[in-house]
Each structure stands twice: as C-alpha cells, then as structure tokens.
Amino acid sequence: MDRPVIAVTMGDPAGVGPEIVAAAVGLGELHTVARPLVVGDLGAVERAAERMGVTAILHAVQHPEQGRFAPGIIDVLDLDNVPADLEIGRVQGAAGRAAFDYIARATELAQAGAVDAIATAPINKEALKLGGVPHLDHTGAFAALTGSPEATTMFVLDGLRIFFATRHLSLRRAIDDLTVEGLMAALRHAHEQLERFGFVRPHIALAALNPHGGEAGMFGDEEIRILAPAAAAARARGIHVTGPHPADAVFHMAKNGGASAVMSLFHDQGHIAAKTLDFDRTIAITTGLPFVRSSVDHGTAFDIAGQGTARWLSMAEAIRAAAEFARRARGANS
Image (cartoon, rainbow, N blue to C red; front, side, top):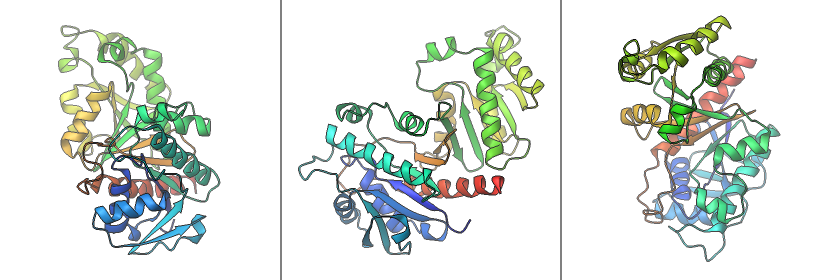
C-alpha cells in the first residue's frame, strides 16, 4: 500500500484537537508514510495553525481524491460546522455535535473505501451529551455507526501491544465482572485481531490480577478460579496463551519480544504500564471495526486550549500508527 490515506478527525473544536491536528499534519513530516486528510472545519484549523506557528497552506477539498498530500500543505475536508461564537476551552453542545459530525463523515469515507484508516483527535463526553449525540465516546460511536458490537481497544507502543479484558469500570466492578467465559471471549478477540494485522500464531501473555500471581491462592484465588481456566480454554481452541503472569513483569516481558501482546485485566493495569514507558507515544487502536482507527490517549485539555502550547507528538504518532496498521491489515488480507 503506497502511503495510505488517513482521515484525521479534528476532535472537539473547543479543545486542543484543532491545534494538535494542524501541527501534526503541518509539522510532523508525515507525508513520507501517509496521506493525511483532516476532516474538520477549515476556519478552526486555520486559526489553530496560526496559534501553533504552522505556516503550511490550507487546501479545502470535498473528497479525498482532491487532496494534494504534499509537504507544506494541510488538506482539509471542510464541514464548515463550527459556530463563529464558539468559546475555546469550555464544554459546549455545539462543539460536541461538530466533533461527532467529523466521526460520522470519516466513517462514511472509510466504509466506502475512500480512506484507508482513521486517526482521531480527542472529544469530550459531556459535550457529546449536551450536543444530543447518543454515544458515550469514540468507541461507542464507531461501534454503532458500523454495527460492530465487539469493538474494543488495543494499545500500541514501540513493540508493546496491550488488550483490555475490561476498561471503563470501577476497579471493584472490573474484578467482579471477571469470568472464565468473558475472559475467554477477550482472548479470542485479541487473537483474531492480531491475526488480522499479520501476526502469525500470535502469543498472548495473560496478566495476573493479584500480587505474585496470587502465590497459589495465598494472595487471592482469581488466578486459580478464573484466569488459569480461561487460558486453558483458549489453548484448547488453538489460541497461544500463556500465564497468568505476574503483572509487575508481564509488560516488560512483552516489550522485549516475549509475547505478541498482553491481556490486561483492568483499565489502569495496562494504561500505567504503557504511559509510564512513553506517554506521548502510547496510541490506542480500536479493534473489531471494518477499518483501522487510531487515537491519541489524552483528553481535550480545555485548560490549555487556544494557547498554542499543546503537545502534538501523540497526534502525529496516531497518524503513523493508523498508516502502519492499515498496511498490516492490507498485507494480511492480500
């Protein structure tokens, strides 16, 4: 695949999304690996570029085929949907609605094959709700728009890949919700997605829940009752799973080539490992969609929006990751 076309959604226009998108595409030297197409509002991108010191030429298009995709040019599919009186740095329904419009348009393009993948800037859950959007977050929106009930998240970072058995739950509920059947389903999904991206007989390392993997039940029995049986059931179905491995060692093992991916049991178990290693380069890939979608793993940062100080490296890495996994998916299916 020669430089995949990546639809880059602008995110919440009242947050840092327009700034990090303008800087990543205008300054990030991405045109050697991708053809980034910003899906957003031309005026908002122009103002953001000025704040970030980006001197690239903005080029409005109505379809990806019109993009120039060259250094010094930011191609923008202009939805012209940001109100003139939108206040930067504040939760607003109009901003939430605009952000969803970018997601919906990018999804249409991806499903039509007009773009190869999507990379998303951050949105705000409260703004979505105020804007009448019937979805909690990016994953929920993409799942609904594409009819993909198994959409979930994989972190990627410098050779480390992390799946999550549970995500946006309290720690107490995440532990209570662990079942052999649920964990087996998560392992199966991870296996299928790794194969989709070209990994041959991928090795999934299952993280333990309790200290030292429970020490034969002395520090907790979830490893005995739930984790080990789920791993055994997965192996019986031809999935290469090892563990449960103590969580204080499994991420290091996978980072150094000891596994294709880690199955994290709850949100912070995987997030802390990845973000401590490199916060800016931790990228989320939504798996289980009919196309590749990547994202930064930070929020709208309303407290610094509009100041021209937002760190844009993560947005650039998300676009790079979208291009990489689009190529992987194409190669695995060719």
